[in-house]
Amino acid sequence: MGQTTILIMILTLISKIFGFAREAVMAAFIGAGDLKSIYTTATTIPTVIFSIVASGILSVYIPTFNKAKNEGGEEEANKFTNDLVNVLMFYGLISFLIIIVLAKPVSKILSPDLSGEWLDMAANFTIIMMFSTFAYLYGGVIRGYLNINNNFVDPVLIAIIMNVFIIAATVLTGIFGNPYILIVGALLGNVLQFARFPFAAKKLGFKYKLGLNFKNKYVKYFMVLLLPIILSNAASQVSLIVDNSMASAIFGKVSISKLFYAKTMLGFITGVVTTTIATMSFPEIARLAQKGQMLEMNNKIKSAIIFTLILILPATFGMISLSNPIIKLVFERNAFTSEDTKIVASLLVSYAPFVIFAAITEIVSKGFYSLGDSKTPVIIILLQQLINIFLNVVLSKLIGLNGLALSTTISTAIGSIIIIYIFERKYGNNDSKYNIGSIIKLIIISIIMSVIARLAYNVSIKVLPLILSVGLSVLLGGLVYFIGIIIIKVPEFEEIINSFKNRKLKK
Image (cartoon, rainbow, N blue to C red; front, side):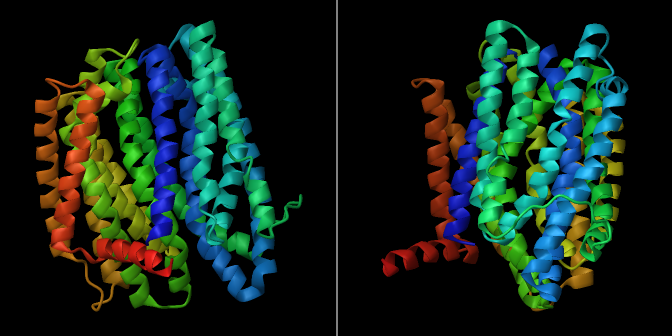
């Protein structure tokens, strides 16, 4: 967990900057109103399919590939990969046809406030975006193949390609006033982002062949493991749909875009830190699990959690303390008003702690999947989502739109505590301990950092432009955190420092 991880984080950061540029351009050209809400509604179904299936593919593919390789060699593992792609494409075609027929009622469910021409447009947008399903299914498998062969760069770069297309389409939509330019551009971006995957996979020895084979025993094994994860991910996405549906029904369709912009900021943290560390540690966790090296696997999981918290805690607390200026800097221009900024910033504060608990859940889940246990996480996440839906109903009545955000945060916190407890009970090792002392110190330093960053902003904004004031506050807060983390001596942080020192010595 050293230099390579840092490199991938930097590349991920660049891709996230493109993502922010996309949302900033959207905020400027189409704002947070009807068109943005319809776009969000239309992209929900492909996103749901991707989140339910494609992300589950990655979780199950790596352990299954290792199993096929250990039992039948590289050729058998590649055959499994090829058969899996074809089988998933077949199921993708069925989903595609179903959604095309049900596009209008599905759009109405996702956003009950839609009617007339807006509903027709949302249905048309949904049909257009459904073509991206095939690309996501293919990309989900090949991404796993690239990761297990230590190619983490190509999967990181896909977001840049996608965002370039969407940014261009958004600008053209603003210029020509044709909303269909936006959705066609989004489709092209979502499909062509995977354009490098076939070449990268072929370079590693994978050659794709047409043909359906439902009898491949590793595909069957994969499907058995995948089904519980699909249920788990489906529960998470149902919760998201409930959030959006309740927001639309209670607070109007424009509220969907407010939730979206707040979640976009959270995606910056989870994408750069959590997903990177979970993705890069997963192949090793799966390898150790296959070999039955439980102590080493437990240590790897706990090391990944601490390493994630080192980076995610300051980012979360910093985002809470600077929520308003950050939203103002990134989004507030043209169609995105100061009132929109206040609402989204408030939602961001309510959502922010969610990323900490979601990170822990994601990493611990990898341990379950590596051991061939995909049922336990499903039960936990189903319980978590039931709690979320219940809290949605209660808190939205008490505190409005922020209640939906707080419900997500609270239910995720409960889920993360449960999943850690059960993993320790079933697979834990007494010789492998969580460094609770370091976690507490990290939280304290993060709080101090966020207070100093806010004070720096309050002083500097009186004499500096917004962008310089926010930048200075972030840099000062980062410096305080860096000094603090050196003082408390967290082993995982020292591992990074030693990695760079060793590299210099080798040179």
